[in-house]
Image (cartoon, rainbow, N blue to C red; front, side):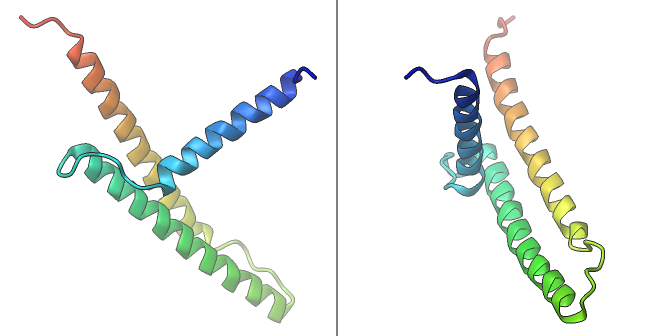
Length: 110
């Protein structure tokens, strides 16, 4: 059977998501003492801290909702959004650094 376009798109999306998860949650493979390693370690720290605090806060939020019968506004977003923004900013900084290193290597030397 030939895969359909939608299943190929789904497989590509799954592969991209797995790659992103590996980048964010996997081990840092950059050389010690490099700027890349510092950026990736900071990104990993924000990722794990954001995930842990968000999960704990969601559990507390749901427990309050179950015990009181009223689900309050999602106050846990006040820590989730800044943590996600920090991860995005560090990811953009890492990608920009990689691009700049590649682009500057291609420049002619005067």
